Amino acid sequence: MVKKVAKVFNLEGKAVGKIDLPALFATPLRPDVIKRAVLAMQSNRLQPQGRDPMAGKRTTAESRGTGSGQARIPRRKGGSAKGAFAPGTVGGREGHPPLSEKIIVKKISKKEKRLALFSAIAATASKETVAKRGHNIEDIPQIPLIVTPEIESLHKTKEVEEALIRLGALSEIFRVRESRKVRAGKGKSRGRKMKQSIGPLIVIAENKGIIEAAHNIPGVDAVAVTDLNAEILAPGTHLGRLTIWTSDAIEKLGNLYGHGGQA
Image 1 (cartoon, one colour):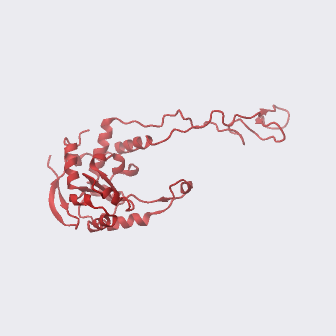
Image 2 (cartoon, rainbow, N blue to C red):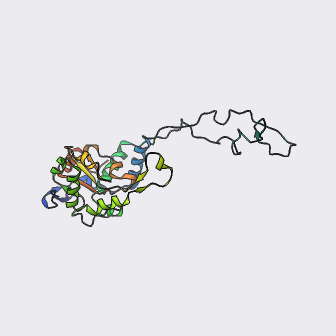
């Protein structure tokens, strides 16, 4: 297999060298496997919830039978003749309520999980896939974008933002900020009032301050190469996130998964 070679850029946006990409960047794109892996990860964060088995049953309601010119549904005793207890009636209980015993965790094999990770990594090197996901990459000099390790030492949000702008990500940062809006629906009152698009991901070999610095830029995430997973590379199960790799992270990636894209 012919190795793919990519340029390495400094924080000024100038090419300063070249690097061989690991073989796993040639892994076939498998959106179906990536979706299974992401949903499996998300299902582990769900909290089981159900209803009280006696909900809607704590009533003295009985049917009055026939002969009164009324439907034969259970009715509350006393002054009102409202229905109760029976599912499908006004004032009645829920028919098939959620059960806390329901199995909500989706499982996936280790081989599929590994293939999903490799496929999501390979998708970050596909210009067509990244553009199709909605990222603005007109000014990005190269996909995948690889930079020198000095970006790992940036401690201030302003420094990270300036570096991203020099690397051609200005339109991408602007796109994320323009997408920020108030969520429709009840989620506004449940701790998630705002929603916004997903921006670039910075993959590093070692955190020297950039994870905290990049956290305040809308849509931008920074993660160590050892902490990569299918969900952060393909948020919402949609592969092709715009990813900025450090050259050290690429080398470490090759050492971790040196055998390539075989699951």
